[in-house]
Length: 274
Image (cartoon, rainbow, N blue to C red):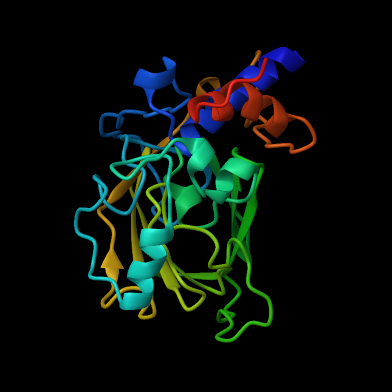
């Protein structure tokens, strides 16, 4: 069982840090296709269920470098300093500086682009996003509160509040730790980033999402993502070993990183352990 988990972990981390399939044979990336339009009845104000992103895009745009707003000098400096393991600027993971490769959180919005199931749990005073990756629980408060404008403590996933505007669920977030990237391609943000997500359930099996980044310290204008799609999963689509429920994908530094470094990351950078 442990050997199997380590294998799953390694394949997952290959996806995170972006080791190419040509170099290592396969990755753990899951790119689901959009389902045909469903005619089943649904409540557009109910986002409950287990959902997974469709398509293979892993950033604000379908292709890295497309529709990116001009950067400020400070933003360009941060971008030039980032060394992602994926995309046109990819470097071998051993020489990169993606903090995710050391078991650190992906943050938001990057985690929303990651191809793993997410359960939306709708409660009277909040909506919870339960991510399979790292077993992250993200709270989006719907009790009327406003996000803090000058929080004392920055967070990996920020402070989030949501509300309904017609049939669209709008989430405003602030207070993000600037050490995360917007996506796996190394696009940066500052601690001044304001993030907005807009969700619309268009049929029983489909949610559309748009993300808006407003970070004048890093970009000269707002960055509006291309429309992203989520598909509703049946229990059979996210069960493992006959157990219905989200799998446990946790990066545990106590032993998994050491194993991953020796078997995958170091060899990719030319370091071979005997």
